[in-house]
Image 1 (tube, one colour):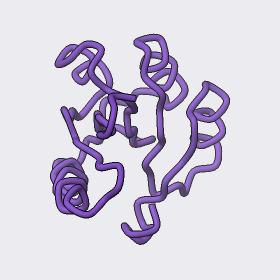
Image 2 (cartoon, rainbow, N blue to C red):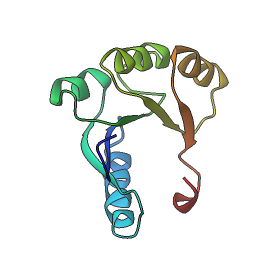
Image 3 (cartoon, rainbow, N blue to C red):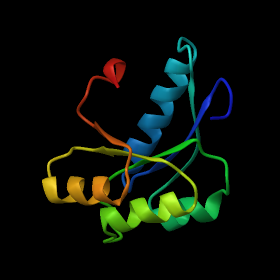
Image 4 (cartoon, one colour):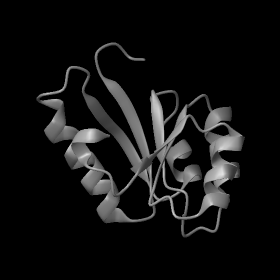
Length: 118
């Protein structure tokens, strides 16, 4: 980790989710013991990896991206770049969840969970 702040990359094809995640992290950072700072967001894994190198402590990844990529492939690409992965999804597709976890994702956070509980 980078010291007192967790540096996050966010991959989600929904711009509102990317903006909302970033805003929630910024709001919570004022009160958190270990704040989260969103360093970069992108709508696909390749775009996130092109945008920055070696700057994330974790990447938050949506399972269903509009580029048609497979969850397991996305997790493997992020792990190969040196980033742990937290799946951030509605978690309604057990096959996609299994694929991501089998590929090495560290865990899953549901998009519908209370922000204070995440």
